[in-house]
Image (cartoon, rainbow, N blue to C red; front, side, top):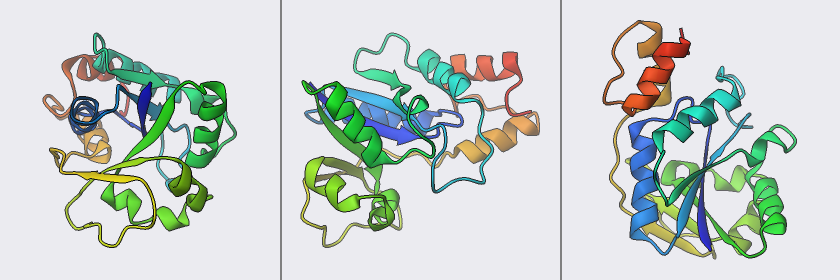
Length: 189
């Protein structure tokens, strides 16, 4: 099976994340898209994170009933911080029947040369990249790269956390089940 891995903190998951995942699941040869929750992103060590199990639950309730979207807690078991190449190596060994690809924004791709073992990653794993404003991709390295114009929303998890903290509505920024769970559990207060 061809699986696209969409890595992130998802702190919390929002409508923009879901639109990207759905777009790639329905407009490429990918058969599934897995949200890979990063317990600790090596490039974002200063951001306070909701417990990874709570973040996973928020994703689970947001994609309930979706056949092509899944949640992965694989990085919960791996050493921290999580490095994409280590996760891909682990998944490729555990699930040799699957072909894994990475879904990322062009902003992340612009920093890929700073990633651990980026040469191995580019050589061995296809990349699906959605262009973000201000981060055009020119002169790509020798790699299996597909660039798509996915629908984008200017929504950030940081903004959502600030809205919750200020007791303002986050309706329409996150799916209703996520909003309800954040309110019920008083996350980000």
